[in-house]
Length: 370
Image 1 (spheres, rainbow, N blue to C red):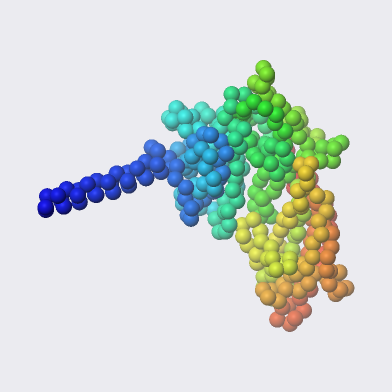
Image 2 (tube, helix red, strand yellow):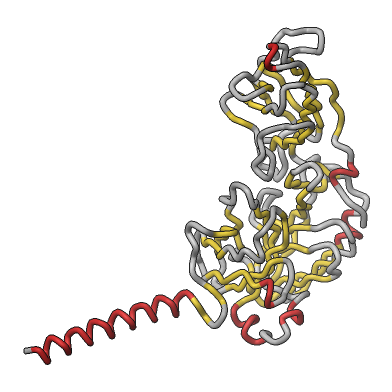
């Protein structure tokens, strides 16, 4: 009887060890972590492709390896390595297929111009990282789309079907050529410029405007029936085009003598890209315009109940510096920068806020140089 009991215990222990081993094998393939981190994660992705992918932060270097994502994984959380994710910043997420990674593990940089895809992502070290970045199921085919980006300052993201569509690739400044492999079919490609403006604490999304259509600039490309290679030279296509942000900037200039103030719209506290709400001196806030069906954004937006001031003591935006009539509802215009000046002393009950300047967002703020 004792022998039988001892044998049963050994079998149970062996089964438990086998289960642990299986779960670890599912998670760790070599030195790549393919497990989804649901709490302590860095970046969330949705892999719509049929490929197992390996992700890197900014550069194809073993020290930049973030982790892996299984095919068709939804809301997959990459691990948060403190050595990689120690500050707030935007960066290109570089993705190789597992086969690319394994075949070139000793020379990862050989895939620099031919990754499976790149996606611009933003990591907030102090706040919200719930944005989910999608990886298109149109990637991974036998056709080649070559993107030439000779700019030293403009990072270009390529989206499908509109400026808010899913991303198929990212061509960073400083990397002349990027080749994407795509399946057969029609591709309506919208270039979008993405960057983190550290000075203003904004994640900017800027896109070129069609000169005749009034909507977003795009090109229609078709692969199949003998067409298996195409090239887009972004400088040739876009160097003479004007840009739009699809957003409004509100610059709050705090000149009060009682400390930080907040910007509220109704019950909502406006925050910067890094999650800050207190305005010590000057901060810029971005308000995104509603998306339209033609791949662009609305020209105008109605806003109401803007308030500024110390926590729980915010005062309504007034008509002007000398007219204290509250501004209830107003219309704001795309690509416009509104400066709100806040003065007074909360302790003395003299806080007031008004729009002191309105101007177009300078093109130099929106674009870069080719």
